[in-house]
Image 1 (cartoon, rainbow, N blue to C red):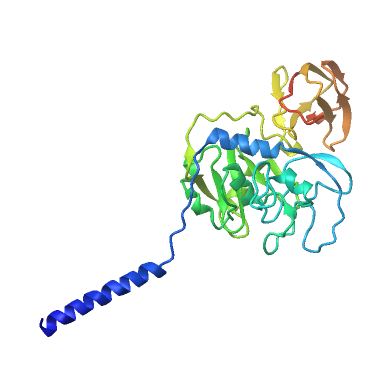
Image 2 (cartoon, helix red, strand yellow; image 1 turned 90 degrees about the vertical axis):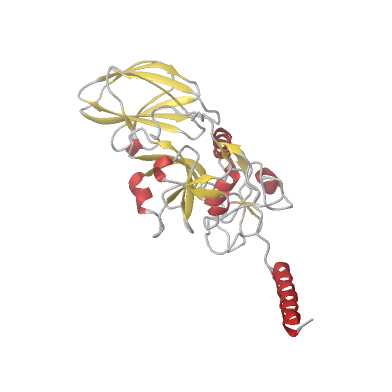
Length: 342
C-alpha cells in the first residue's frame, strides 16, 4: 500500500472516530408528547377549573415568601375557582408534585392555597395555578410550561384566524385563552388565571379590550397561538348572548318592549343590563330561578330594590340611567331568567 493510500485510510478512520464521538456527546433532542384534544374538551376542562368548588380553611402564614390570594381572607368559607399560585401546576385533576394527586389532595396534605408573590421560582408546599399553569392544565399537558416555552406545545397563527380555545401569549409576561368576541365587539371573552390589583387572584372568565391586547404587557406583544394537538370540532360555547356583561361598565343596554332571556352561565357569572328611564317603569319578570336575585341599582351603584320572585313590578324612578343586576345565589349555574321593560 502506498503512502497516499495509507493517509486516505487514516483520514477515513479519524473521521469515523470524530463522528462517533460527536454522536455520543451530541445532546439528544427533547421528545415532546403532544396529546390530542378537541376544542370542546379543552373548553370543558377550563370551565371545570373555573367552576371548581372547595372549602377554604384559614391558615396562619409564618413564611415571608408566600402571600395569599385576595379572595381568601381570614374566615372559613366555600369558594370557587383554583387560586393563583406563582409557578404552580396543581389543579382539579393534575399535579407535577409526586406526593400530591390534585388540588384537594394538596390541601389535605397541608399545602397553602395559592401564592401571589410573583418573584423567583415556585415556592414549595403551595397549590394552585399561575397563568401558564392554567393553560397547561386546560390542555392536559404532561408538564407545566412557562410563557417562554409555549412554542413546545403551541404554534403561532395569524390573529385573523383565531378560534375558540386558541391562546394569546406575551412571552415572559402573561398568557390567556381566547373564547369569543364580546357582545359589543369592543374586545374578547377570555379564560385565564389572573393576578392584578383590579382582579380576583384565581381562574376566571374575564374580558380584555382589543386596545389592551394590542398594547401588550410590559413591552411584550400578545401573539395568537394554537395548540399543536388540537382536534377541530364544532365547539359549542355554553353562554348567553349578553356576555361579557359582568361589570356595571359593561352592562348590556336593554330596550323597552323587548323580552330578554338570559341565564347564569357559570357559578360567578353576573349579568348587568342598563336602561334609561324618562318616567316610571314597569318591570315584567316572566321567569326567575329561585337561585337568582335581581338588584335594581342607580348610577351610584346604590341598591334601590331587591327582587327574588317573578312578577310585575312598578318602579317609581326619576329621569336617569339605571341597572338591573342578575346575580347567582348559590353554587349551581345555568339558572335562567326572562324579563321585559315597559
